[in-house]
Length: 122
Image (cartoon, rainbow, N blue to C red):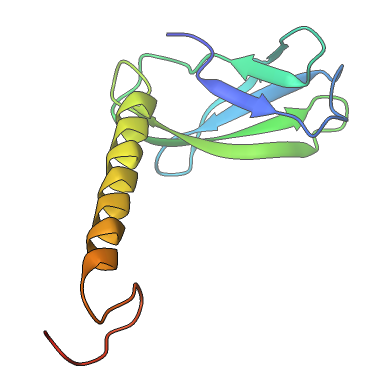
């Protein structure tokens, strides 16, 4: 894979020279100063995760190389080969569907409204 580490700027960070530091799950530095590439001049920067690495949750920070100021921080869950983003996105989607379905069921119940219980079961 490529471009797993992403930073979407605030609109004022286009044209900067950014680098990424990646930290192991235990907080120790894995790799420093990985070059970040801006996609055109649209304030979106990407970098590659330094694979292969063991499964775990890694942290990263984007910094401005001109003064080492931190512009963003984040984390990536790595399965040993790829980022686990797809699984997380699917899980979040399924959870949202369950919440919506539950809300619709509760709305049909007599003498109840979502978030309130009148103490009676009809």
